[in-house]
Image (cartoon, rainbow, N blue to C red; front, top):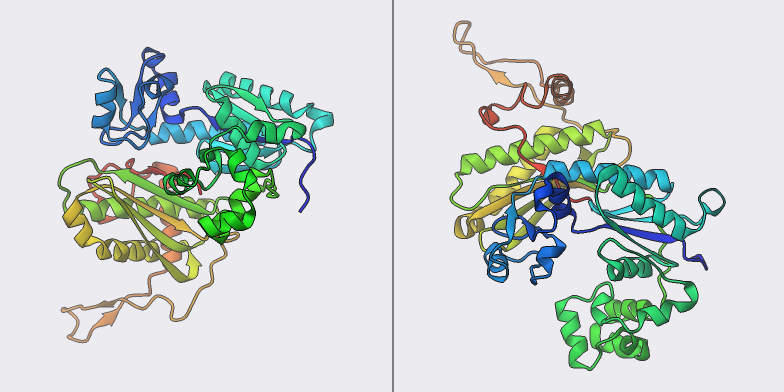
Amino acid sequence: MFVSARATILHADLDAFYASVEQRDDPWLRGKPVVVGGGVVLAASYEAKAYGIKTPMPGRAARALCPHVISMPPRMNAYSRASKEVFAIFDRVSPVVEGVSIDEAFLDVSGLRRISGEPADIAARLRATVMAEVGLPITVGVARTKFLAKVASGVAKPDGLLVVPPDRELEFLHPLPVERLWGVGKVTAATLHAHGLRSVADIAKESESDLVSLLGRATGRHLHALATGHDPRPVHRQRRRSMGAQHALGRGAHSIESVDATLQLLVDKVAGRMRRAHRIGRTVVLRLRFADYTRVTRSHTLGVPTTRTDILSGTARALLESTRPLVADRGLTLIGVAVTNLDGEGIEQLELPFDQPVPAHDPAASEIPTTHRPIDRHALDTVLDDVHDRFGAGALTSATLLGRDHRQGVPMLPD
């Protein structure tokens, strides 16, 4: 696969994103140690990181490190809006943008030299535009490959710009610790350290076969390639592969009815967003976080992709039911639902049998049950979407959600 001989890939990464949004929106927080989240730190400002606060550290541990740390409740809608504004700028800069998460993306600027200038100049203007229009600091790494661009942005943080020239890649990469390599977590790092491998240069000096013997075929080959500067993956302009929503329940007991209602609300949100985007999905994913900070994920793949709220809801409820013992034992603090394996333009294959007639009994007429007309679930979803678009999400809702705040539940990070 062709890889440019020039440094034309940008990795743009918003700095301490959630915390930066809080500091942007409240000037009093600027320059102060700020964390987002209560029980668990979801994000920490660089002032907080200076005390050793990290994600996903328990809030109690963060306060022990910095007693005057300021804890802010998450405002996921604000973060989502900021992300959309930043990604709109990315799309103006380059036609080839690959989103990695809510706060970072790769941009390929290889074809823009004549109209936009050198990649370093493009990166500098991008940073200035994000600050001027969105009010957030962003760090950009520029390199020949995606991996090196991401490493460069990590080294340049916070609020920096670093270009890795093609003829100095190994000079830049080799002194870095092995933890900078994609795929090196705590377990792999401990294995490498135990064998005296602490820098990227140490990895590069090892033969691929030795690394495979130590770490396994996939990991060994992967790390050897990265350590020697090989990363052939191009930047792909991707459509989102999943859509989801989640809601933090907080600590304490939650009734089954409350959890079920929250799940229904989240499914309603996700299904509506899918239909507006003309996407259909095949796999329903349930994500739970417990009071002891452990997490669990359950998923089920449907026979055919769909946007039907009732099918997605029934699948999500079945997944939740399978986790009831864990919820009862550990206590639930967060619930999320996503639909993955998104397809095409929302053309949904209808299957036989179609929706069955609903039996109804009319005692005034006779003892023989009659039937109502079949319920057209697709038409029902379309009507609900139209009402929500015109009058708001709370105008018409499921009976299980009456009296509940329709605004709860927020976008999950894109895959």
